[in-house]
Length: 166
Length: 166
DNA sequence: TATAACTTGAAAATAATTATCTCTAATTGA
DNA sequence: TCAATTAGAGATAATTATTTTCAAGTTATA
Ligand SMILES: [Mn+2]
Ligand SMILES: [Mn+2]
Ligand SMILES: [Zn+2]
Ligand SMILES: [Zn+2]
Image 1 (tube, chains in turn purple, yellow, brown, cyan):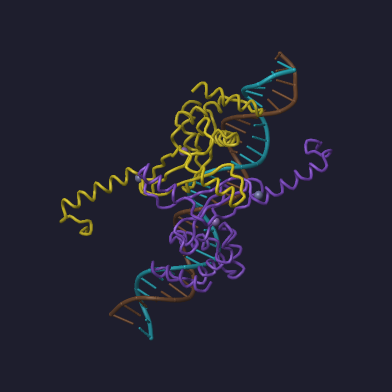
Image 2: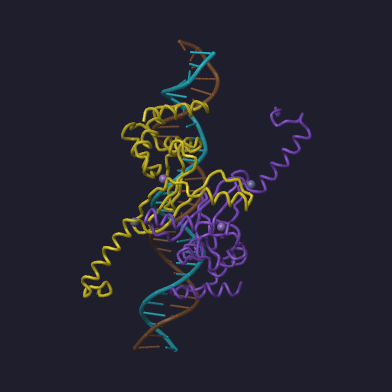
C-alpha cells in the first residue's frame, strides 16, 4: 500500500504535479476499493470520511489527473455516471468486465484474452492497437446458480409452476 | 429500404407499439446513415429536415424504444454523448469498433472475432454471454500511412528535421 | 366510427460534468 | 528575508445531456 502510494507520488512528481493531502486521500480510497467501480460521487463520500474538508470539484480534478496519468481508467457502463477503475500495476492492457444483466454486478477478468484477436486486427485492418475496452453482458455465475436451484425446486413441486402466478 | 421499414413496423406492432410518422422518419434517418454513429442531437437535426415539427424528446424516446427492441445499439465512445448504431439485419453479435486516437475516426469490424474468447469466458468464469462491447483504441490505417509518408520525406531532406522547429 | 391505449411537443426538471473566480499556502529567487 | 509567482483549494455558476411532466392529439382495431 505505502509502496504503491510512493510510486504514484513519483509518477506525479515526474510530471510536475504534487501529491497533496487531498490527492493522497483520494488515491487511498481508490486503493482500498480496488475491485470496485466507484463513481466520482462515491469517491467523494468515501474521501470525506478521512478528509472532511475536501470538495467535490477537487475529487473530479484529481480523478481527471489520475486518468491522464493512466493510474485509473474512466469507464462507462451505460448507467449515466462515469466510473473510475484503478489500473493494476504492471498490467500492459486494460482488464475486461462481466456485467450481469440480472443483478447488475460487475466482475473483472484480469487475463489478457485478446492478444490473438489484436494481431488479427493489426494485420487485417492495418490498425495499430494501443488500448482496448471489452465488456461482456450476460448472466453471472451467482444468478446462474440461483436459476439452477429454482428449476430444481420446480421439478420437486410441479404444481407450483411459475406460469401459475396470478 | 421499404422492406426493412416494414419489418421494423411488424416488430413494433408485435410489442403493441405504433409506427407513428415521427418514428418512421427517425428510422429512415438511421437507415440512410447506417455506417455513421449519430448522437441523439445529430438524429434530431436530420429528422427535422423531413419532419420539422418533431421534438427532441420524441427523438430520445424513439431511440430508447429502438434500443429496447434491439434495432439499434446505444454506444458510448467516451466523448460525452450517447451514439446510436443500427444493428445489421441478421447479425447475431454486435459489431466492433476501431477508434483512432489521432483523427477521431470510428471504423467498424463486422467479423465476429470473439467466438473463441466467449467460449473461454463461459467455461472459465461460468458466465452466460448474451452480448458484448469491444472497442480498440489506436491509430487508423489512414494516419499510419500519413506517418510513413512523413518519415519518407524526412529522410529525403534530413536538414529539415522536426527537432529544428524554433 | 368509437374508443382505449398510446404518443406527441413544449417546457421544466434533473443530473453529470466542466468552467470560473477568488482565496490561501507553498515555492521561488533576488 | 520577503515580495512575487504559482498551485491547489472551495464555492458557485454555467453547460450539456437526458428525462419527466402534462395537456392535447393520433393510432390500431373492434
Ligand atoms: Mn474493473
Ligand atoms: Mn458501428
Ligand atoms: Zn447476476
Ligand atoms: Zn486516424
